[in-house]
Amino acid sequence: MEPGLAFLLPLFMGLLQPGRGGRLEVEPPEPVVAVAVGESRQLTCRLPCAGPRAASVQWRGLDTSLGAVQSGAGSSVLSVRNASLSSAGTRVCVGSCGSLTYQHTVRLLVFAFPNQLTVSPVDLVAGRDQELACTAHNITPASPDVLSLSLLLGDQELEGVQELGLEEDEEPQEGEDPLFQVTKRWLLPPLGTPPLTLHCQATMRLPGLELSHRKPIPVRHSLTSQETRVTTSLEAILEQNSTPSPGGPGNSPTPGNSPTPGNSPTPGNSSTRPCHPEIHQSPTPGGLELLCEAACGPGIAVHWTRAPGDLAAYKKREDGAQAWLSVLWAGCNPEGWFQCRLDPGGHTASLYLLPETCSPPMSEALWMGSLVLGLLLLTVLTYRLWKCCQPARGPQGPPAPLK
Image (cartoon, rainbow, N blue to C red; front, side, top):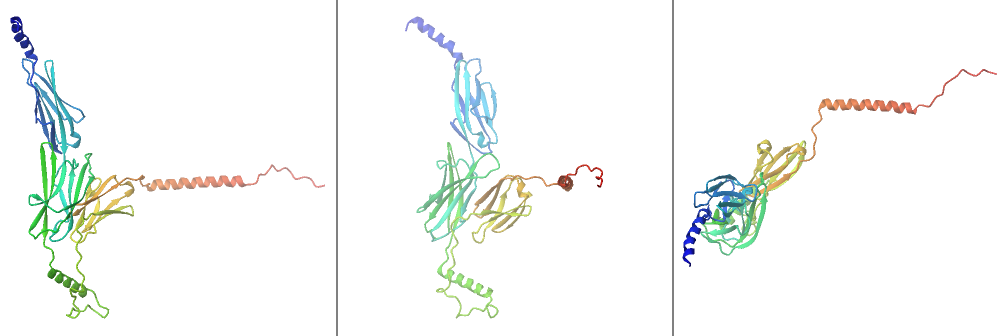
């Protein structure tokens, strides 16, 4: 290199030095940042700039839900408070140092994953093939690459199960954020001897984050042949004592007429299929009555959990597997979702009612005024018809003289 050029190169680099800057520093540094619905998060962006001139840094968004931004000398802080699904989107930090400009892109992912797992049936019986359903409620995103449901025995997946299908349904919500319920069903092999507990595990895998919830499923003993025989005999005895005979009161069982294992019916196994409630509606004077019921055997109950407006404003009555809800003036009822839930099991049924065209009731004074006006119009019309029906008469002169 020529001596002159060697002397000028450091000077030339020195002239450029004040305009140079480092790379943008973003916290957290991941390109995708996950935040739960209702939580808050801060994104901080900094740019070091050599020389006396401070860098200009600013967060910008590609949508309308940018959040609260506070920018100062060389840094900018984006605060997302009480995150909703509409808060998700792309954020861009733009920084400039002299004539150089930098940018860093972050995608904000908002998710919902509450610990709301339900299973049906709530317990299992050893030594029997049976079907099981596990449901995760109020979640998003619900895609299979994000959410998975599995059955665990201890810390290992249960072997020998047959998957029966995966269902995804949108759950009704008051707000704008759509949330989902995901149900997975399995056919289980005969389980071993209790004490034994399975778990349904829901796992959500997001960039840089993995969450999971578990729901225990106890396994109880199956009835032995001796227990079945005793149970059947007791059921037959109680039924015989409670049913009067044609000749009088029920006969007491004797060794000759007691049921035997050979001719007594075996108790029916309770269904292992998931139980779902149903909502029926029927008109009533001045309103509408909704009935939520579940024909799933003993030990269950249904409850109303949601109605347009305030649920406490409705008249309701709940009795085990049936629950009634009265909606007054159904023609003017508020638009929205009615929902009831099954316990145990957690399955829900929903009904959406649309308001119909209705008019306010007519007051008594207005009704009487309308009646009087109608009578007057009828009188005038009758008089005019009577006048029109009379024969026409000409003018009468003096009588002609007799000849």
